Length: 149
Image (cartoon, rainbow, N blue to C red):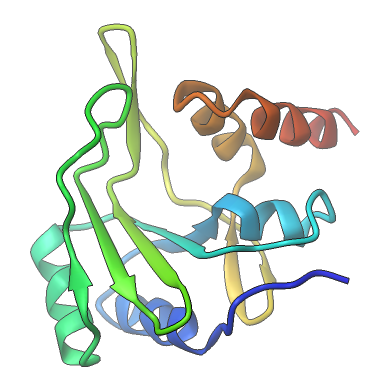
């Protein structure tokens, strides 16, 4: 059995971003859970492409409380990380998800490969690379084994 926070706020955010024509997908532990690789989702990681101001306006229109914490620095290179307070959990909205690989900026394009719990699920191959570059090798290995089939 997979445990996860309520999906209602994440579903609302996804819908609001899609209404604005932005590509959007959910990655992180939700992606892993959707593939049967973990049994617990602690929070939702929503990735999207577009202008941060468009995303913040969408969150504001939904009446959601959010913050934009300072970047943790390298290897992270995401254009904007917006943390939404969803009551008993947080939702990270990653605008222009990217990381550094040495001196090379690696963007992680939004691609939807399926749906799980009413949420568009991100590309496992993209997240395998992302996890490697952001220092989560155990999660990268889970996806790499799954991709190898």
